[in-house]
Image (tube, rainbow, N blue to C red; front, side, top):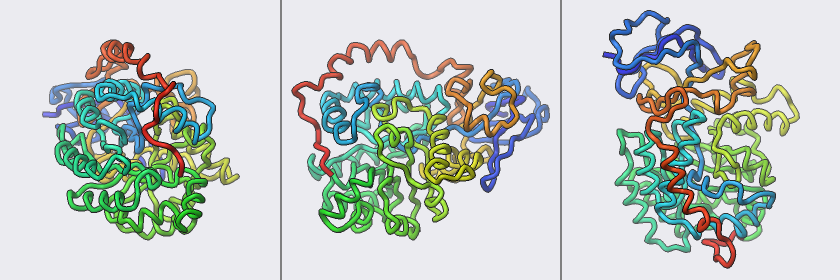
Length: 444
């Protein structure tokens, strides 16, 4: 039997950074994997337990958010028109002092509600109270790589606690949940703490998800204080001995990029262009990064520096930003933008052989996109429309791990009214900043 049959769909397939739209397909799913992609009508409908009539919608791999702080949706709109230092010290680190584990549970659900509606099926989340985030992911049916944020100021005991979390949750929910060590950054974790984190990650077979060189100012400060860039610090402390997700690396130097390019272990940079634009952090030259063989994935960052968790926005800003940065409209082509959003994000996420492509044997993380709206007409180029025209609201159906979690915009795993009812009474407490001590001080 076929567990799920998607009929009369057009499929986005990417090969060697060339984009192809395969017309008139039926996609068969058995268990949690794609079984076949066949010409429409080739499969007997009676063989399928569940049938989705797509009616010519476009099937593509679900988006993978390679760097986020999902529960920060609770403070959406509270850190506006400020610089990086003020954003940390006057806003987010004071607001986060109010956070409870239950806040994370409901905030995670709210963020996943938004991501599912935008076609995001997987997220690498770096935040607090990850036990509660994991329970929310289990309920939502999404895929997640969860990292418990750690500051060295909170003591070495966090490393053992986080390792215990990794052991408990890695591989949970039929493999949808994976877990990772997550020291916050070189400027909030001293060398001893970073070394201990790297040793533990190696010992338990985990990777590391860490912020690094978020701005060029951070890199300059590190060079003044210790004669090393933040990326050189991570290399010296052994972080790159395990697979690593590097958030941002906007301040990476040419020497840093050589270090990253020479590494043999899986490593990638999570690129969050809306945060960079909003906080005036600068941009990576992704053309140069990718020419060196460094993988780049799309990320939203948190909703206090981005305001949404919408990766359609991130993909569009990535393509436009690189053209503007390089001064060359031919840079970062449409197929390259789509590759970054799919298979390359899967590499950064750590599952390149299982995610990011529509192909037999891959995990069935599939979204169906309606391109019939006025903003797509006339549809002279499907791929151009995906990168430059598409909206989150164009996503009609979302499948993760072979399970339908949203069908024709109806959520099947999360209850919007319930989530809002639990969050609303918390908002007054969560918004307080007056008189609060921040959980950390930004002073790179």
